[in-house]
Image (cartoon, rainbow, N blue to C red; front, side, top):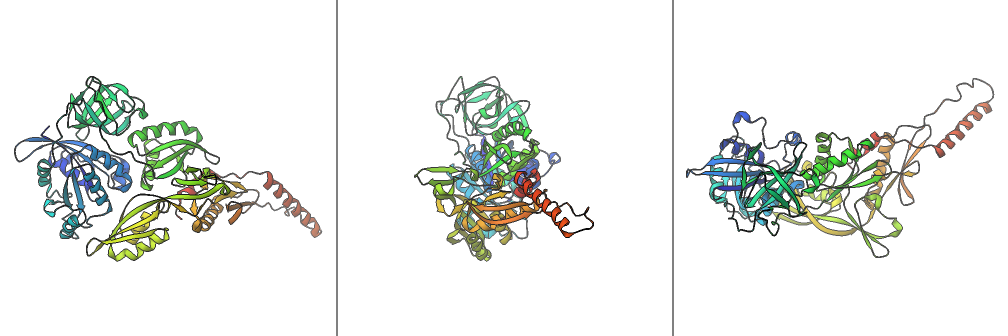
Length: 599
């Protein structure tokens, strides 16, 4: 075990983690340059390659002969950088003893860099700082070294200068891993155990578990038990990632690899759970990572209601691969049977929807995202509302509290005025400003969670020319003046367009939705009134014109009263039709309105 090193790569988004992983794989001979089918080899998902981001952590085993002539086993886990996927980072760090911290030499320390370093320190990991992209003309290495000491409290002498693109400094990185990262701790004789840090569902082999073995060993034929539900199963295969799955005879203490048990139901395994050997069981579970709590909620419905069962099964398989995604069944008068889903953020929501469409061929529609509100009723009781449809009548409500966040925004000092304006627009309060160095500042803001759901991140990137970055954490609840505007189509409320907003924004939102619906709903034989209403008060109205038949075409002469009689008859017919007629809102209208959710 003294020759094993488990480490992960952490950084802010786009600082070069996956590119460095490619160079490490090449330098250790794990893959040949000709086998690099695409850059960022560990980013296997189509979505990851298209967007240039890492969504899933990827484990890989490398063999490396150090300068002292000893062959070491290096287990690397490449992690995502976006704030929405911090749970992936947390899971990966629970399986490691060290971490490579990448800092982009052109951008310096950013918000997620700070968050990931704090996460690594919380897991007592040895952090090796690397200044990446030193080959670029805009690189400012002295500034990065200064920030390393000032913001992260890591001595500049520990930093290594690398270029993940052309491989500069990679041999020194490998030597630093061997020298600085501690080997796994010796077995303490408490029985065989391993931590599940990821899993996926294979159509042919069932559930595949990614595990870090802490004590003992596991091999094919062993009987294992999952501590969370006491489920027992026989191991069919164990192996490692090189980076493809490669079967081994045994997985020993200190190693990272995969275990394929005889489990066919995706929901039976839980990430963060402990596996133990039935022959030599451990008494208590391993201290894993904290379970993630969803922050953003949205309804997901199949466009064809016949696909409901298929969507349910697809979500179960996706949840196995992504435990931060939660769902439960719900029904909507407008959209039929579907699911209320919880996500860690807006990017996470977008990725889940895209994966359902691509990997599981599901045609889905998502409703407007919302958060969990605490609604206090007149009788003193409190209910949690994550779906605007379930909000009680305004007469029963005493007050509503909305979730708040503490956002840390890091940006060049030039843009501080525009960022403060954006925070004020979003009903936020700037609580602290801190100068990091001569050029950068950290703003701490107290903002309602609902306000950052839609376009806050996009606007921040836009006004700071992409140099601004944000990290946030929950900061409790605060009372707010919140109401639910209802959208009425021909007098009937359409629950799919309901959303809880602040009173200051209610009129604009109602006006915007009414205008969009008026354009999207096709004309009927009668006039359709589209109204936005709060309680009994209508705050906005649009009208969809009616098809009009020219009833005067056959009347080519005679008295004016003949024409008037025909027009009156038509008017009566339209009135009767409006009373008994139903407005048909095609599925495309929901897709169109819910797709363009910017306010």
